[in-house]
Length: 339
Ligand code: PBG
Image 1 (tube, rainbow, N blue to C red):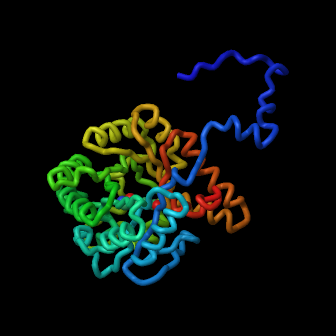
Image 2: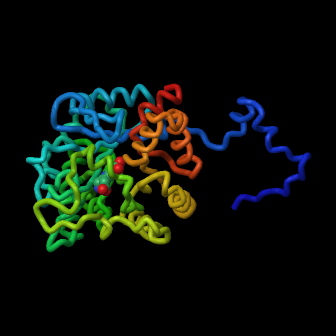
Image 3: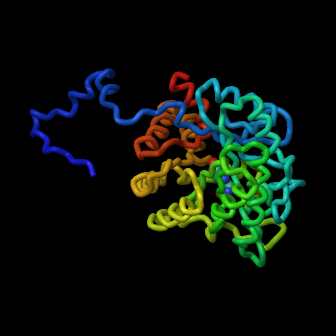
C-alpha cells in the first residue's frame, strides 16, 4: 500500500511546479519505456518476400528469409524477442490442424533461420491450432464442441516440435484447461527443461482479434469442414470477468508457466494491473491486431498523431506494471525511442 502524506494546501502545493520543464518531467518520471520492453509480433508465410496485410497497414507477412533478416534488425534495435505467427496455404489446413506438429512447418523453418541469423534474439511461438485448422478454431471439434483433452494432445506435439526447432518461449494461446501442465511435463520428459512458457493466461473472447484472422488467413468462424461454432466463447474468457482471470493465472503458474499474459492489451489494463499486484510474476500484455489497426487507421485519417499514440499506448502498459508488451509496433516504436 502506498502511504500518501497529507498534501499542503494550495498555494503551498502547486503540482504544476514539477511539470514546468522537460528536465523536471524527466527527473520525476515514474516509468520508462525502452526497446527492451518490446516483443515484436510478426507474421511469417510460406511464400517468398513480403506481402502486405490489408487490415494492418505497415504490417507484412514475411518469408522465412525475410524473417531471418528481421531477427537481425531486432538485435540492432535492442528488441529482446520476436513472437511469430504462421500464415499457411489453405491446402495444408485440415480439421485437426495436423501441419501444426510438422517439423518442417513454416514456423519451425522460421525458428531455425532466425536463431541462426541472430541467436541473441529470443523466439516465441504460439501454441494453438487455429492457423492450421480449416475451421479456424483452436481445437479439435466433435459434434460442434471444442474437445479439451484431445486438443491438448495435439498442442503437446506442436509444442515439442517447436521446442526441438529451437524455440525459446512457448506461448499457449488456445485456452484449453490443463495445457500448460501437459506441455511442461512433456518438455521435462524430453530433456527440454530450459524452454520457457509464457501462457496466454487471461485471454478474452475479443472482437479486437479481427485483423489477425486476415493476417494469418484463417477462415471465418462458423464455416469449414465440421459442425463449427461461430465464436470462441466456450474457451476464451468472457470480457465481463475479472475474478476468473485470477483463477486462470493461478492455475497456469501452478502448472509451470514462467511468465503470464493478458490479451487484448489496452481494453484490459485493469486486468494487467490486478495480475501484477496479485502474483509476483513477469506479466505481459498483447497489444493485438485490432488495437494496432485502430491507431493506424485513425492516424491515416489525420485524426490522431500516430507516433505519439503508439508511444503513449505502450507506456500505459509499463505504468500498469507490465514487464513488457507484445506489439506489431515494436520496430517502429524502438526507432521512435531512438534505437
Ligand atoms: C491464436 C491467436 C490469436 C491471436 C494470437 N494467437 C487469435 C485468436 O485467438 O482468435 C490474436 C493476435 C492478434 O489479434 O493480434 N489462438
